[in-house]
Length: 152
Image 1 (cartoon, helix red, strand yellow):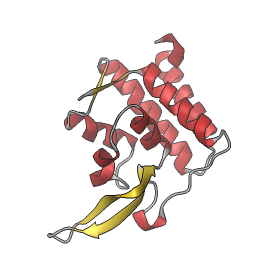
Image 2 (spheres, helix red, strand yellow; image 1 turned 135 degrees about the horizontal axis):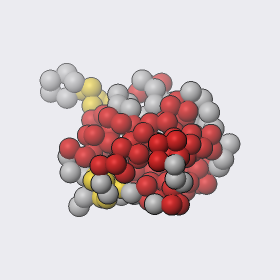
Image 3 (cartoon, helix red, strand yellow; image 1 turned 90 degrees about the horizontal axis):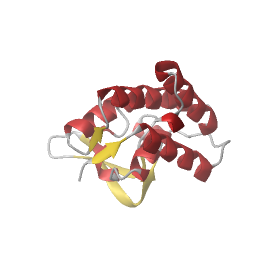
C-alpha cells in the first residue's frame, strides 16, 4: 500500500507526536546507533557480508520526530531500518518514495513537506524541544508557500 503524504496530514502527525511526548520533550539521540535514529530500541547486528544492520525488537518504537510522524501516517518501522541513523529527513523521504511506500499530492507539495521536515529535524538534532522543531517546520512551510498547513 502506498501512503499519500499531504501537508495537512504530515503536520497533523507532527502535532500529534508533539502532543503525545509533550511540548517540552527533548529528543535524546541513540549513541550506539550513531546519533539520531528513526527507530529506537533496535538490535545492531552484522549480516553475511559484514554490513551493520538494524533489526527490530519487541521494544522497537519510533525515535525522532520525523520517524514518529511518518510512522503515525502508516510507514512501517521496518521501512526505516536500512537507513535508520544515516539519512536526513530528505533522504529518508526519497528512499520511501523510491520504494513505493509514499507518494505526494503533487511535486510542489512534496517539496514543501520535504523542506519542512528537514527544518524540524535540524532543530530537533540541535537539542531543541519538539515544540520548537514543530514551529520551525511551520515557519519553513509559510516561508516557502505563504500559507499555513491549515490552508492546504
